[in-house]
Image (cartoon, rainbow, N blue to C red; front, side, top):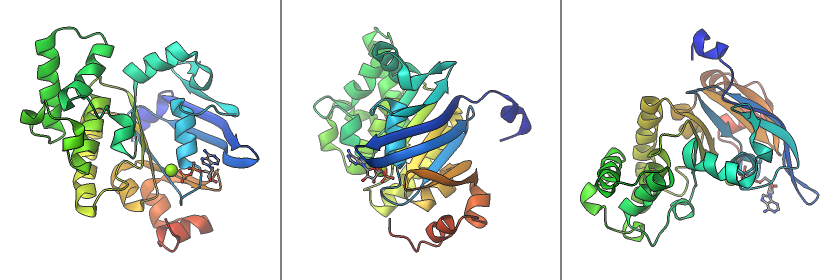
Length: 258
Ligand code: ADP
Ligand code: MG
């Protein structure tokens, strides 16, 4: 990131985001700013509140307090139709489990194409051609356009979910453990692909993971969470190479279970 991009207004500005489950804290008083084209990594061991934070931002969960300003509006209190429009156009969400982000009984091409149609595309030939192009971009053989995701491997399903999310050209992508549950070699390939797409498309992204390797590769900046709260934040290299908080030091040295 350079001084020029820093001087723009943040794309997303979160203050005091809090979510409780009954008496239990999901996440508490989280502040973050995300600039256009920037990738923010959120790390922390299991149960630290990463998914809760992301789900509140995406509108999958209702927050108990705080604000999240995007394009001059608070997305935490958007009326449902506007929230859906945002999810169809400007934002994409990549779930850890591809089946949560795909329609498993619809063809690969249909999964990508229906997002285009939701955005207003009508011409069948164009939609199919764009879907084929996107399959190729996520390294799926376009000849498999009529296959269903259930016929794909886990890594392919995850790549299809990414194609479905990115085909509409969003500005912001929220990813929850995008490489979780995949074999190590498959993870590496997916990470490479994600990094290329994010860079080329100039996407802003929030990547939640318990895997330090993922954020080392993808994130410009890092936020470390523990027990629902942010304990440390900064440039990725600084946080990983010179962690200030004792918890971050443990996390980086892989002493903590993930
Ligand atoms: P992470 O994604 O970092 O593993 P989560 O956001 O899933 O963390 O969880 C944060 C905290 O909220 C944990 O203490 C967890 O047990 C609790 N929690 C998460 N989801 C629920 C739920 N649906 N009901 C009750 N507690 C929950
Ligand atoms: Mg989680």
